[in-house]
Image (cartoon, rainbow, N blue to C red; front, side, top):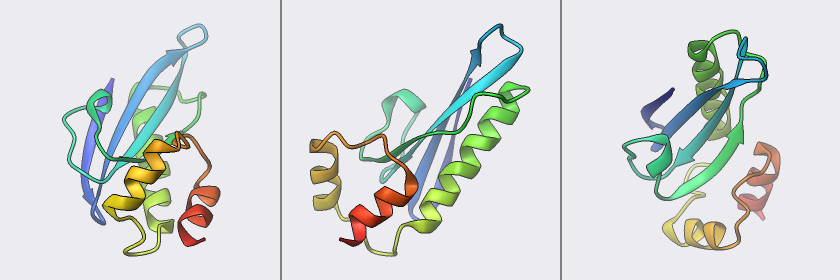
Length: 109
């Protein structure tokens, strides 16, 4: 199951929920993108990829957790810190999966 939101402070959020383990729990993933996207799988200009947990009781709960994680990450990105040049360098470095803290430190350095 997936869902897309945006814009949220100029970014777009895509979330994906999948069954985990025996199927009684759900895990969730989220992407923060600089451009609109049609689905979780078609995101362009990915700024962050984040894991939002694996012990959610339903797909809907997993998606909401992913949205909260993404909104929290967006709130920590300094205004104007993400330019198309930075996005290109960030994507080229393959450092897409990272913690929010290191992403913000990377942007502020």
